[in-house]
Length: 192
Picture (cartoon, rainbow, N blue to C red):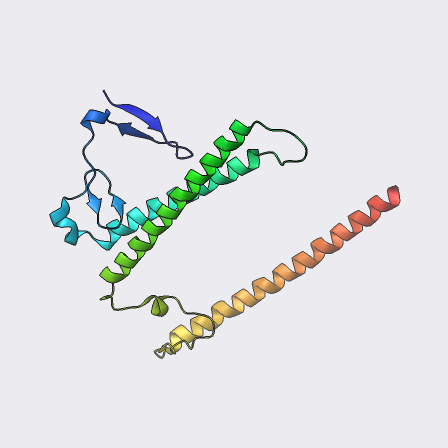
């Protein structure tokens, strides 16, 4: 008795249970309703940062969807350049915009709470994000390079020499192609 509702832009369908059969969604403190099938209130301490990140990803997708809907509503709105528009249509659009903006505010608050909770849960990680991604201007710790054997150094030099030769050959071919195209363009110009 389940039906499918197509998701916009996803090309997937999601089974929907009738209202009386849907399980009650549990609440994460400060995060709003959780997904059906989430662990009960006592097991909230065991929620992993990965699960919170997944909820955060879905929240970001909701934010993008709401923002796109706001842009679609504003694109469809006519500018008041002397054209009288129905007051009811104006109020309807204005109400939709207000609702979308209110929902966006709630979604951003939810995203902030998820972010703070993830940061709390991952403070014990060994590497901070600054160590994982170097910033421009930060000093990068020198990488310790172990000395290579003479055979490896010789092989590297041979490969570099082959690459230089291939690059030189490619440059010659590109110059020849450029000259050929120049001649073709000159001949076509003379024919006119």
